[in-house]
Amino acid sequence: MPVTAPPPSRGWFTQLLLRLHFTAGLFVGPFVLVAALSGAVYAVAPTIEQSVYRQELTAPSSAPALPLADQVAAAERYVAERHPDDTVAEVRPAPEPGTTTRVMFTEEGLLESQTRAVFVDPGDAAVRGDLPVYGTSGSLPFRTWISTVHRSLFLGDVGRLYSETAASWLGIVSLAGIGLWAFRLRRARRKRDLLLPDNRVTGYRRTFSWHAATGAWVLLGALFLSATGITWSHFAGDNVSTLRSALSWQAPTVDTALDGSSASASGGEHAGHHGGSAMSMGSPTTTPEQFDQVLAVARDSGVQAAEVRIRPPATAGTAWTVEEIKLSWPVAMNAVAVDPSTMTAVSEVTWADYPLMAKAAKLGINTHMGALFGLANQVVLLLAALGIAAMVVFGYVMWWQRRPAGARSGRAPAAGALARAPWWGTAAVVNVAVGLALLLPVVGVTLLGFLLVDALLATSGRRRARQ
Figure 1 (cartoon, rainbow, N blue to C red):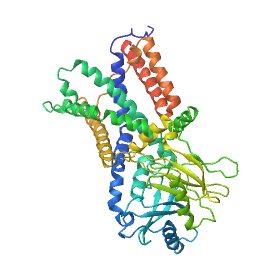
Figure 2 (tube, rainbow, N blue to C red; figure 1 turned 90 degrees about the horizontal axis):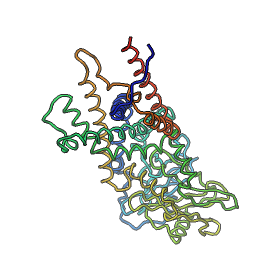
Figure 3 (cartoon, rainbow, N blue to C red; figure 1 turned 135 degrees about the horizontal axis):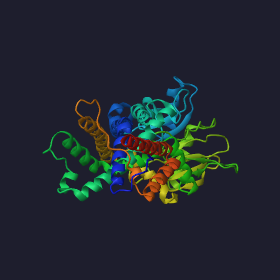
Figure 4 (cartoon, rainbow, N blue to C red; figure 1 turned 90 degrees about the vertical axis):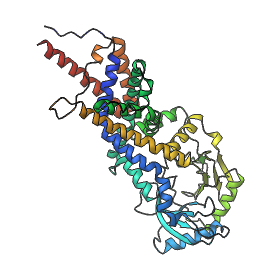
């Protein structure tokens, strides 16, 4: 007897969301859990660093700050005794009294976008220590280690697939959860139970109540972390960058060329967390006195923030750059290129020059890193990450609690929802999956695989039922 598809039925979309939410959570849960726990630690890492690296970050001298020339010269003498081949790549003057100036050097054996920072007390030019630092945010070793775990598990590009899977599927699972929550909202007698766990029940129902209530509170945070995290990913991140370039949504950069060629300088929006452009190598003719002169030109040209970085030319025929790197609100992103032969500004970029979407991307990334609103930002991220981790754990506990008597694993929602959908529903779901495969390859391809396997399981089940 030929096998015919069942007629379209109501409730197919809810059943599809339920099965997708369950299946994705089951198999992607470990990736999301690792990303959430490492992200929770990363969120508060800037505060932890202030304590762990207090020696390097604090300046005990109360004397007025010496010229940068004296501070750079002290750092060069310190480095010459230990790493004579190192050259100055960047200087970050102390942003406020009681903090140190960072004189950063290139060094063989460090990571890409990593330099050796010598911490100098601006009051007496005493060297307070040296540490490898990473990216625009100047991550110190603890935060760099956590960032690498969060990004790739120390497995390079292969490991980056883990974080891309976690970031991509976190958004899909969250959106499916929104749909399920909305369907429950229509049927719930006590709306309170959708926001607060119901401890009057026990077993599976209590765990489900905690899972659903936690999800309601962390939902927006999960979607935000998923969307911003995708921009750092391997395949999807490249697609997002290509799209932003095509739509002219990228951040502007100063032109550092002095000989008519084209060159630019920028740390990139992601340089503070998971990477960024390589540091400049420093011109052979760079002198300590030039740092004061170049900074003075930049100050006259509108670079007023205390948090700046001064970079010597990368090659002959290019300019110095001075960039504001204030990541907290209100951000400061002005940048100036300075011709060292004339000590004049030759190119300028201000925050007002950023396209709207470039501003949104910058603010979103700073928030993802816990930098935009300081400690409050870090606490919110910590709670959101712990909430996401708790939802994963609740999900596995629910799966275990739903197992049939004597079984070693839980019971999955029934397959075949898509087979019961009307033609337009099937077409819409497939088109969404194909679109995701083009923009977010990891989640799109696996989503198409899920739909295919789900349809095959439903077909196989109907055949067995008819035999």
